[in-house]
Image (cartoon, rainbow, N blue to C red):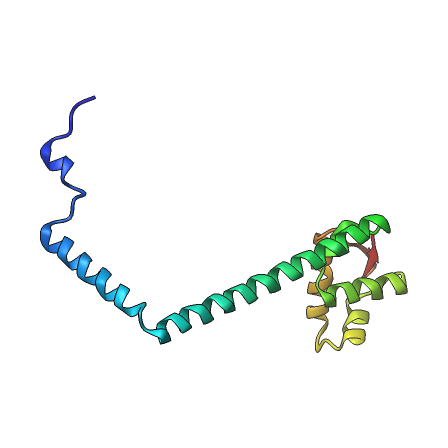
Length: 143
């Protein structure tokens, strides 16, 4: 392996001017940490982040509990990760036995059947519902 030339050795070493600039910036930042307002702001931001993390963990744990409960009740596991409205739609379809996009539109107050149809098709892609066509009507059934 060839030895490094002197230029390559000192490539990563900052010039004296740059080194002085870095030191000054570091001193300025250290002086800022002596200010109680800056410290309070940092503490507040950390607290906000911790609350957000706790909220996320709470949601994850709730979904895991739901998944565990689903295994015990022999509910398909994909139902454990549905949004609240999707779960209501699945329950509606299960209760009715079969539903069309128009049925879901009326039951859930969608302005048009496109939104209901889109949501139902997403549930089909997730494997929660299945789709059957009878003539011009498309029925959605629980898997």
